Length: 143
Image 1 (cartoon, rainbow, N blue to C red):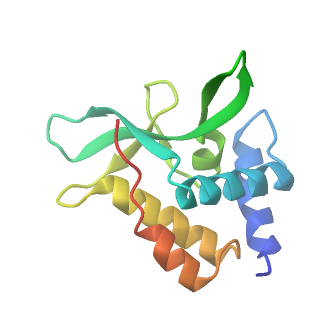
Image 2: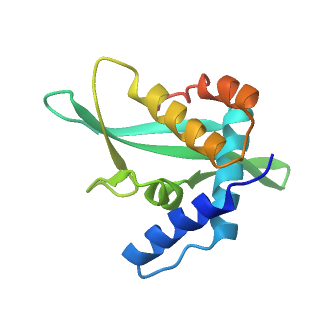
């Protein structure tokens, strides 16, 4: 698939206007590819920081669980956050460190968030419709 570079550039330009540290297209593309790969391989997990008293919103963060090099024959794992990626996609930051506020109730908001991100990545040209339809259904487990 061909990336929609104009739309990616618009996202990056908007992000860079609001922040002191710049985001490059290469970094954004890397985040997108990491996100897709983690969903495909079932390595994405979601942490819910808090739920509002009304139940109308919650704070969440998506994390990629990744194997790192073994050390003395022990497998080590790392968790990588998608904070900058979510911020570039204009999700609202929460006061909690590394979390974003997601509004809504009456449905699985983790499913909805992943579904929305996969849809955006499809429109940006990272995945085709068939792959997007499959990945959009893969809700990350919640910890």
